[in-house]
Image 1 (cartoon, helix red, strand yellow):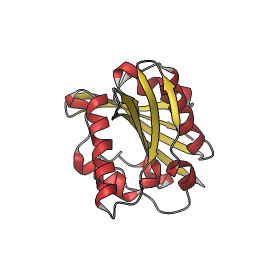
Image 2 (image 1 turned 120 degrees about the horizontal axis):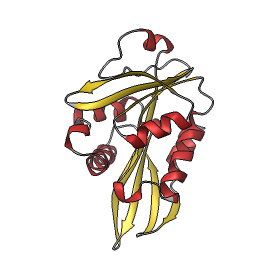
Image 3 (image 1 turned 30 degrees about the vertical axis):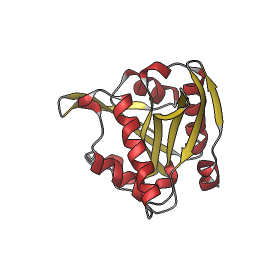
Length: 186
């Protein structure tokens, strides 16, 4: 069911762009799949300033380990499709919250009772737009039945989304010189 939703592409309207497409990742067994992961990486670079950007190795681990949880946002501008954001989540072991939070969160392949919301962001020009809200609502629908949700946030936008999803702040610190917060529900 999740795979079918993530594999679907749909067009969304937003000011400043002609159209938007949401594209799900497929398993990283082909060069086309690796190209999609590279586009997700480009979206991350467009969404965050340097100290907050994800490492390629960490993103590749996520995209390869649970591609069905990654959704890439593309915006058409001037006849060219650009990566303008992405949402990503993967299942985790429920007991993970009781130990120190790892820098790279292990993917669990057991039945999903807990999920790590790795990323939900769009480029600064789209923050607060109807398109951004629509994309966040799609991510919410994907994880709404999962009893335990965890997110680490690096921005005010991420913090607001965690609060909207009923999460509470568990930890606050700096990671590699940038602010970082761990939020959880359940």
